[in-house]
Image (cartoon, rainbow, N blue to C red):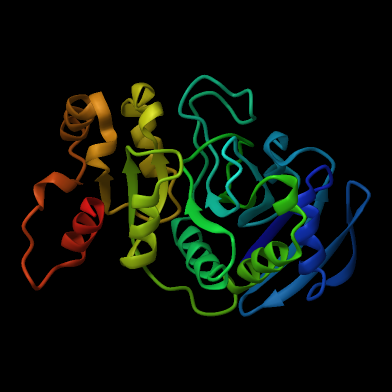
Length: 291
């Protein structure tokens, strides 16, 4: 498997992460846009670091220039709350707003398994640090036609240049490809906030890997096409749609009708208020949604 790790020169977090990756990568004779390419062989995967000039979210169709099976953007995350964070997500736009890259109403292919592996490792390495580990909803660009994910340091320059954070992200990236890849059940999630702690809990405590998340403030745009994209633009076969029931707001009826019309399997957290002592993994998901 060929993995392209993308670090962007204007991005201080990306350069911080690259600095730590280079401790284990070897320089090659290959260049890309005038920048040296670095490589590391891990298990059955070849990882290469590419350094780009533009901000990560604007590198549309970079998969047409770089040959890889999976693209991992190592970048910064910015938020108004300025919460120190280590986060992962896949790119894509649920609406017509592509001011932050990507294409209107177009999602990218989300690698649910690798998003889960990354989150598990971030949670392990981030313990006893200032950083909150979280899974974000699907958002922003760039648009690629190959599986792609973002792994980020948030949320201010203080954290972007934090050497410990750079080390954690670098170690997480290499660990994702260092052994046999587990097989998880796969879900997409509708509802909740941009930083979905419900889904983070599902990823960390169940056998489900989550690909795309459509947060509450984007549910007004959700239709047959976008739901089909979320399902079909997941690297793995999607087993289930999880409804963050409390986080659907006024969209509950619309979402249920859409899922029923499309004959898509889903679970509502409100349906499992009383659980048996011996739970299935699906019951566990529902319990976590209620907590």
